Image 1 (tube, rainbow, N blue to C red):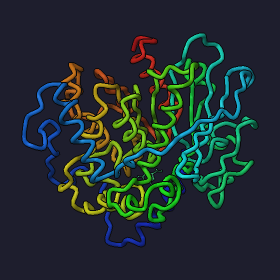
Image 2 (image 1 turned 30 degrees about the vertical axis):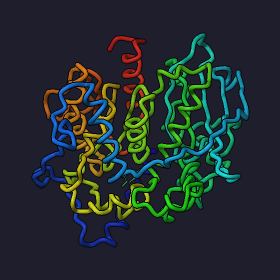
Image 3 (image 1 turned 180 degrees about the horizontal axis):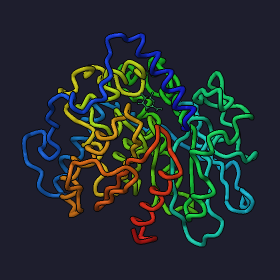
Image 4 (image 1 turned 90 degrees about the vertical axis):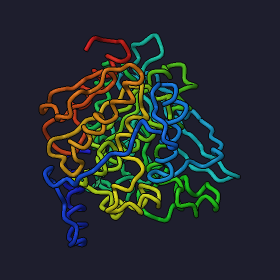
Length: 428
Ligand code: GTR
């Protein structure tokens, strides 16, 4: 998302706040309430977790269950039948730079189907399976690059008049309008594949009581559950389904898939990366509340703000913690902990105060003890690094760059460098 989108988000935010006269946004660290984070390394029955085995066998499953029960909702017990179809393979796409694949994943339940359209670019100058970045998009596949062969997304997309998107419907004129967020050629040049699909394929981004999108295929009993699949979980389900596809594609190295996302899709990337250990690296860009930022700090966007503005992003149970963050049995550092021992990178932006950059950093810092169980170096100090200066420690990466709530070329270069290092393609 670029600055213009940020402007729309801010207009929306101002409208929300003027409706909600009692809400006072706190951007002052001095006003952060006293809080104690829940114990990452004490099991539900009070045992201290001292080894990576105990983490894997005892504490990690407990924490996943807590996030399912209190924040993101549960995936359906029985997964839906999923079929993949290759609609097109073009070995000479983007002026010979890429192999382009259009794959459709069909989610099927007793004759009803919804579909997810996966767009994949693979560098042509490669002889072995390539590492790949996977991220969802807001505006449809056609918005990430102006190439006219990219099918126009038919499902729900985010509105953006600047991008010629009205009534949540992608248009021909929206081709390439979000390309500043998607440096496709640069990613290919760095030797990575890039895959994307529109988040609206899985679940349109509005509150309809969990009826449309993937929810339409779930059993009625599951729909009444306060832990039902939230929109964030529905989108995460799309990411894990894309991973299912990658496992079948000989061009792609299934052991080197990086899942990333910006903003609400950054929250989703963290959740998908936390539960699905097939993702080798997890990257959150400006994910904020319900993503990398600690909820208990109540700075910028709070649990109440997010549940009021976007009631469908999280499960109904999460709403019980509006203004009661201290009663949550988890906080977001535990989401980062679930990614251990795999590498995780959190990117913040200086002016993105709504997302609480320091709270995003603190989640990484407080996830340290889990990474330490695996013998990894951890961030030693809880001081925010200098602006535009990278912090790489063991499996953790962090930066706070100048600028606003968006994903920039600077962010991309750092994420590519981080992947290069952890996939042993380059030194730091
Ligand atoms: C904001 C929301 C944030 C962030 C962002 C986005 O309005 O309050 O939590 O996720 O939207 O996804 O664009």
